[in-house]
Image (cartoon, rainbow, N blue to C red; front, side, top):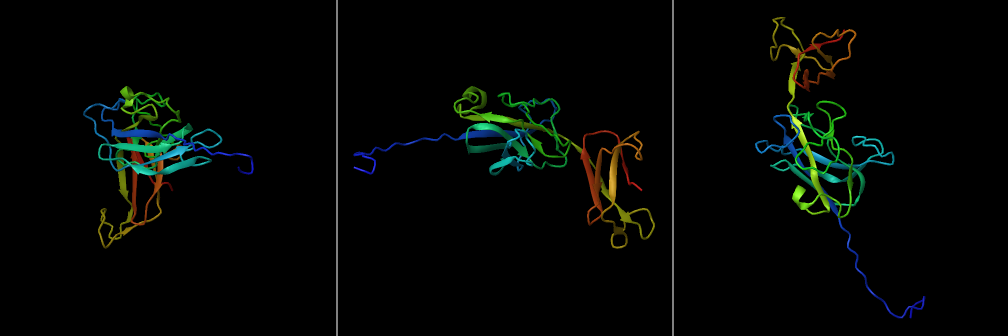
Length: 238
């Protein structure tokens, strides 16, 4: 008999079910927002899982958002997977960086968690070349897409996919032309660090218009812009 008058004891076991979330990043060659059989996955990309904070808004890994678990990397087929996730609301998947030449979301994606496999659910609030994320996702015990939808059970959502399309890049060197011959001479000419460069669409007035992108040269005098195909020019502001 214990302090509370109990004369016997009994053991109970509790099973806690972890959810899982995934699963594909692919190059959407025809830019239709749907994974076609001939299109290939993108390997080696860092993928993170976040949960929106008290404000309920996805802040792209900033603000009051909370990072969940550790980063994963897409495999040779472009697949990624997060496991042992607590059921809940406000989750989102984010890729903080993308390859320079494939850094834009597919044009015809679906920007809600619709439970459909092999369509692009990617958002890119910062524009081409910036972080890419999914919409907010709710994970419900025994309430996720069926096996026939995404090949797993009701405790996982493997329909959070990212279609990525191609970008073009322009650059890349600012130097002091010491020998004044109009071309870069290694060992003679001097790369210039810290120069501001702006990219404008053709026809824009660089003195009044807002640039499409702005960057600065690095210590080797190098710079680059990566964005959607189009007609542009590079401008060095006075």
